[in-house]
Amino acid sequence: MRADPGSRTWRLASSPHVADTVSCSRIMLIVLAALLPVTVWAVVNMGMLAVGLLIACVVSAVGSEALWNWIARKPHTIMDGSALLTGLLLALTLPPRTPLWIAVVGGIVSICLGKMIFGGLGWNLFNPALVGKAFVAISWTGVLSEQVVPGGWYRGIDVSAPTGHDAITGATRLAIAAADKAAAGAYGFDTTQHYVPLLFRNLEGSLGEISAALLILGGFVLIATRIIDWRIPAGYIGTAAVLSWTFGADPVFHVLAGGLLLGAFFMATDYVTSPMTKIGRFLFGCGCGLINIVARLYGPGPEATTWAILFMNGLVPLIDRLTAPRVFGWRKRNG
Image 1 (cartoon, rainbow, N blue to C red):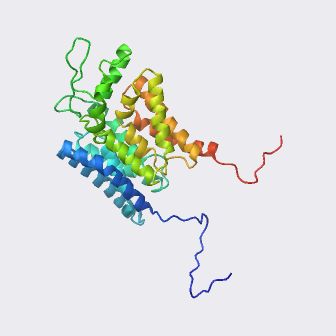
Image 2: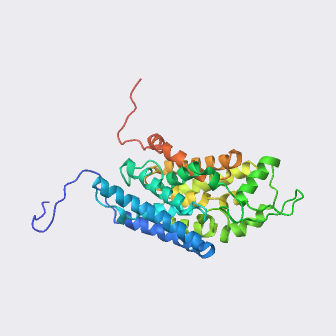
Image 3: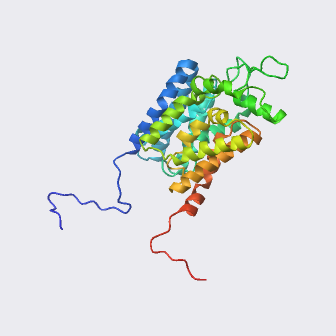
């Protein structure tokens, strides 16, 4: 049936022709809202250290994208919210005592090397926030690993130790667990006593590690609103828990500690850098969990979330190729 030209506007465009009412800016807004509780709780507990770090990361990320588009004479894209989200995620991966100049460098690298150099949103191979985190972690390893109280990165903790010492002060729970496991093959403290602090008020580690419960809440919100696919965090967290138990480690402790939950719900689920197929997303999550736990238990450092996700980001094209559904009417060639 031919439509009346006076009452309908015809639009000619190449495929695909399936449209969705959910815009990119709306998706970013929902993810930002899901991260708001843990961000606010970090500010409440860490004060101006957290505020300064958040401002430095967000302003440098948004400003870098605006400046890049201005120099390249491209349309401004900062209103889609992706640069804002990148800056926030970067801040949540950094310890509160991070020097602001390092945070600014991380924001610039996240946008310029992690996103815009590939062509902008939708073209990047790796998660931009994790590219910035990896860059500053490699460039200033000594600074990031310093744990001297009160001038270091982390607030010190006291952990009961059966080795003759009353306490071990100045490291994160995850770092202490990794050191104990490597030295004696077992934990030097009762990990079950740290479930509650890790869930509700964890004062060592990065900003995003302040509350595992708030990260889980935000992740469930994203799953319930269908912003993210449950298969990635399920594969990630499930594999991490099973492998931890298999290797004789505490699975609950290793899921709650470190940046695993932040990565599973908010970084590994990035649309651009994760597989397109359902089975591919699940395998992608499992791969992240596998690398994370193996590197955490047997690698040089206790935290491996950044490297696990970045490594699996690089395998996404291969995963998509191997898990692509068969084309209708396709037949295998004889011989």
